[in-house]
Amino acid sequence: MQNAQPKASHFINGEYVEDTNGRPIPVIYPATGEVIATVHSATPAIIEQALAAAESAQAGWAAMTGTERGRILRRAADIMRERNHDLSVLETLDTGKPYQETSVADATSGADALEYFGGLAGSLTGEHIPLAGGDFVYTRREALGVCVGIGAWNYPTQIACWKAAPALACGNSSIFKPSETTPLCALQVAEILVEAGLPAGVFNVVQGLGDVGATLVTDARVAKVSLTGSVPTGKKVYAAAAAEMKHVTMELGGKSPLIIFDDADVEAAVSGAILGNFYSSGQVCSNGTRVFVHKGIKAAFLKRLSERLARAVIGDPMDPDTSFGPMVSEAQLRVVEGYIAKGRDEGATLSYGGARLDRDGFFLEPTVFSDVTDDMTIAREEIFGPVMSVLDFDSEAEVMSRANATQFGLAAGVFTSDLTRAHRVVAGFEAGTCFINTYNDAPVEAPFGGSKASGVGRENSKAAIEHYSELKTVYVRLSQLEAPF
Ligand code: NAD
Image (cartoon, rainbow, N blue to C red; front, side, top):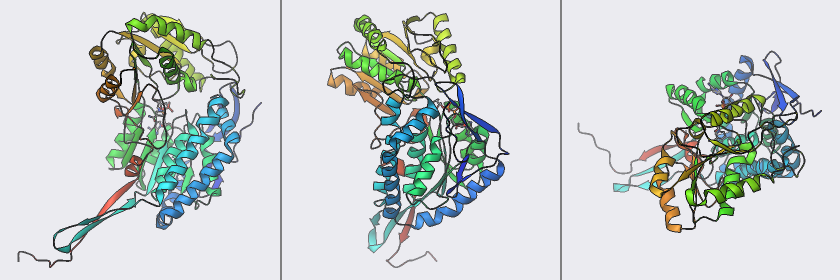
């Protein structure tokens, strides 16, 4: 049996901290169903320690030059890359995602974020604005203070780094609460940051369920909250933050459209649909789960899709040949099974998969429904599992209005060989992140985030700096100051 027990549950003020009075949270390896570690939910005393540590460390960290802060972040990126194998194994244990994925997508993308924002840190400045009479304004780009990050369970290392890197680059301190389902990886990120020279208290990790997150969000010492999670949780967290006028970034769920026109390269479109539905067993927020296929190529698309899915290697996630792993938990698997039953009941055609595998762990076949209509539950709600809905369409105008007819607006994609149409279609998408002839690429250099109910703000890229700092305006008068009396 695997053992992934961390040194302690929390990481506060530069060291591991335990308080066994907190409710135990078992960590289950999704490929076997075995308990591989137990952490304890943060007690009020632990939450207080984390807040006090983050608050007292912040001013000193912000007083360092951006270049000094950036050097530490870049050193942490180097350490993460050196330890990629071990971190990837831990990510696989935490999430069940195949090592084939984790070794190229998790610690590596976390390292990219630390390196990118480490590189930007030294060049974060305000501006000088000349005015009449020699007067001028200058702006200071200042840190917000203590930033709370709250994570989902699908990318525990990446989410911790996507939130920590811009926050720390701007001079904030941070408290990160991982998902209770995947609590292990963020502790490694904290350890590595301290090893790279991060002062104690600047980045802290506390464990717990939603109640711990909610306590952090409402504390007066917290200036900003960044959540990656579902829309219902986002609405609660956004409302709690708004009550105290706190800054927010909300990275929430989606039901994104992927439109495949009849002039598309079908092989590439099938690749896009596979990447946009079955990577990480479909547990990716930006997945293009509503695949609109032009009627003329529907049969060819479905045939090729089934042939390609039959090549998926499903099994032990630690085997480098495995390309499709289990769902993260029994609970999530049951949610997805419920949607598969609804798809059948509501009259969609099950074209591929649909069944749980007869083995330990939480394995579900990659599943494709065709003949899906817009009103079906599987076409409206986020499933967050390996279930693709294929819908037919006739014309561009029709498919655009159907693609946008959703509360979500996280991502959207189009496959076509018509360049003009491709740009016209993405201009018409109501979504924050769009793809032409590809799907789900998310380099750190590019803004990532959703519109409509899928989110507020952007992660990654220079845009994230706006969400982790604020401008102070300083008016300097050199001309004579006069008053009316
Ligand atoms: P979730 O909303 O159940 O939980 C997310 C996090 O919020 C967890 O850490 C949870 O403990 C915490 N939480 C729950 N209630 C809270 C409260 N009242 N106050 C503060 N924190 C609270 O989501 P999940 O099931 O862990 O993850 C799946 C969801 O995340 C999907 O909807 C998916 O689309 C979304 N997601 C979005 C992105 C993105 O970048 N847009 C990325 C990954 C996942």
